[in-house]
Amino acid sequence: MASESAATPHPAKDDTKPASQTLSRGIRMLEILAESPGPVTIADLSASLGVHRSIAYRILRTLEAHLLVMRDASGRVQLAPGLVTLALGVQQDLQSAALPELAEVANEHGASAFIAVWDQRDCFTLVTVEPRHGNAAVIQRPGSRHAFNRGAPGIAIQSALAREAWTERMPDEPYREAAVEARDLGYSISRDEVIPGVSAVAAPIQVPNQLPAAVAMVYPTASPPAETAALGNRMIRAARAIERGLGAAPGR
Image 1 (cartoon, one colour):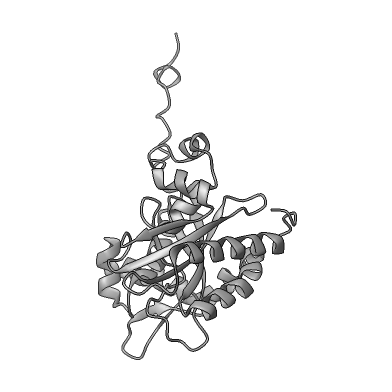
Image 2 (cartoon, helix red, strand yellow):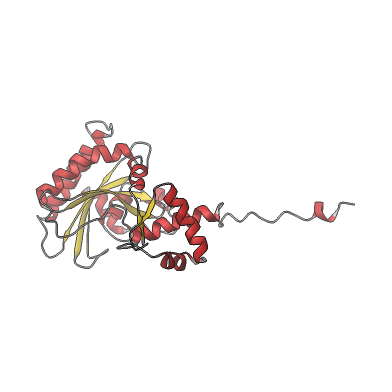
């Protein structure tokens, strides 16, 4: 007769739990600091993480040792320059190819120009260029994110994939009808979807061996820098130039 231990099946593996709770908390602390408009107290960090202050402090000390966070004179915590070194390696080819085009777009129209990439279930701002004279009315911060169901960059990224391919990757995220229109136009637009009073225009970038990205520009809805079609066509030209910089065929 088989023993009870041999007959009893092993508990099902719970893939929803993080493999390392400490690592997960450390990453979450970085996310909290990135989302904060200013330095944060350790007490606020422990509350946001839902852990005792001593645990938050140990996580903080580890991140400090790796130069990822730092404390100011009052003891408040903020992100540290060590993160810049890590960020430089994130889609470095895309960043390098995009920067000249982003600078041209930003200076031509006096608006923030940026690259949005696919990050888990969100659109993530990878790199941003402000106009040379620093008079942009709307600032798009690197590291900012929003859901695919809002904003021109998400529509543009969707439009680079067929509906079936999108549904396979994102079964819980609907394929917007605006993405169908963007496939025909070559660019997408949004008005007041992410921030009231702010519009965006974007075009998809086909990145070799990676998920599609988007080049975009944001501006006040009440005072667009040019006609929508002109802005859209400018984004298309920028996207094609970036793709060529990434090795795409000239006809793309």
